[in-house]
Image (cartoon, rainbow, N blue to C red; front, side):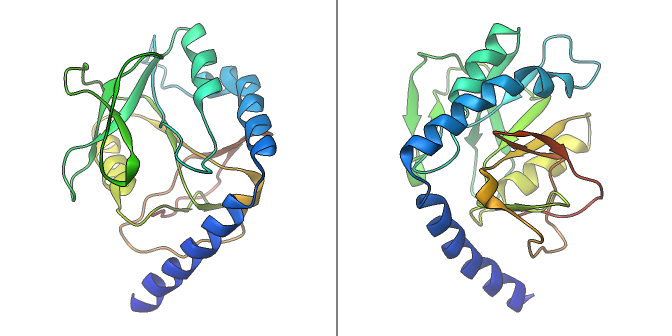
Length: 202
């Protein structure tokens, strides 16, 4: 376990360096290309979701920006939600959000919907990450928020989770621990690729 923790720490440093090195023009073009995948994303919604709720995030720094994709999803009838940190060791909650709605800045510069926004349960989660492998194991930022959230949601409803990644963030293997949860697919600007085995994430 200590070796895995140390390995993850070092990988986070390297992954941030790689992602930060992607120039802004390339990042912007990648975000726009995601729009072409809107129909594929919605096709993954559980059949019980007539008007799916899609959870995403407000990009920080060099993260792949889902904003253009979110606009396309809204145009196709989806409701957009953003995650809210309820407590340090708790699963995330989700509140409905529309472009133009106010946001509140929380720790680490993460912006969230105001507490008055309607709480919802997502059908599709678009998950931020630093690295992701072919088995859907993702290296996150170390807080374990998405591991706890995926575990909770999967315990009572069908959901579809996709990690958003630049091609540079896709690797052969990510170290994982017992509690880690994998995503179902990886969404890059070039396609939606399903993973083929059950595995962990971070």
